[in-house]
Length: 468
Image (tube, rainbow, N blue to C red; front, side, top):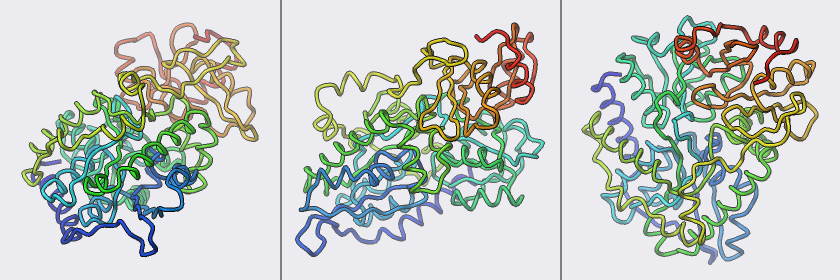
């Protein structure tokens, strides 16, 4: 995407925000003597469920606040309208992705009454795997470079858009980026109106699961952390610190529930959003693409600092952000307790795949190879020690598979087994990749491997062989 086009797109987004930011009014009272809290969230952006969809369904926030408070939940497709309403004082707490968070700060910092603070994280991926680019299943494109000169749908200013811009810059290509809401862009991809689709969680997984899109670029290839976080209006937090404390404790409760009951949480979010539970679990389940942890980790904050510099460089309309005043973990430290610094330093996924592989008979201990099978009619998933072991389980399941999940051999990004690109290695090992480009790069370094289709891999695995 040319820098001039990027400036135009960001300016349009800024004007949209400014149009609803003419005044600032509090949202503290509901007229009935209760303190009101307005929460803006994105139900289908399932990396935010612990501060949105799941938290709402569990009722943890209302239980912690009690009868003297009333909570109003407002659902949006992207972070931009949440920011617009926060600038206008109409939303008190909101959740959104990393790029929208920076735009949120840039829009609110010049307005003291509307100024916001980043107070927690919902979920993250250290390599950037929450954002991806897809093409139609029948497209001839095999790499992002193949989309040079085409039309690519993205939500301007979103985390998915940020990944696309950086990825195209690395690939030294340009393309026309068309600003769409995620659902509109998905329809455009299906109808042929665009040739590529760059979006954030959970849209890439949804289109792949539905057979409406094929992954051509995995954000993990960037190696740049991406995350979603929670912001609150500073004035509201100072006036109602007990509300912010209750929200963060409720978010901790929801995060703990997600870790302890990942399948049930996925089913709950699926029911509330209309997303397939299999897609929700791909991101939010054990060893999912998203790691749910509320702490404001150093790698995430460093990535945010880098994003500030990047946005400044590509758009003169971005005013910049003082991250030292925007990031405030004081409320979270109080809500979290003594273990905050220890947990902040850890990047291990608290919801790891464990157990014993029922086919290979091996303990599942290595997240780099741990895979998982979800069968119809079962209320728990089955662990697999390796992708090869998973293929054996799938082959033996005789059409009962709801979803099978495997980690990319290099990046570790979890993906759908039947949508992965497979290589066969020496001794009958099978190696999955999220993209053809990733598989090709691996094969260049390991010429002893050879391409194999998913169907062929299933048949070969069923016949036995090395289960490494």
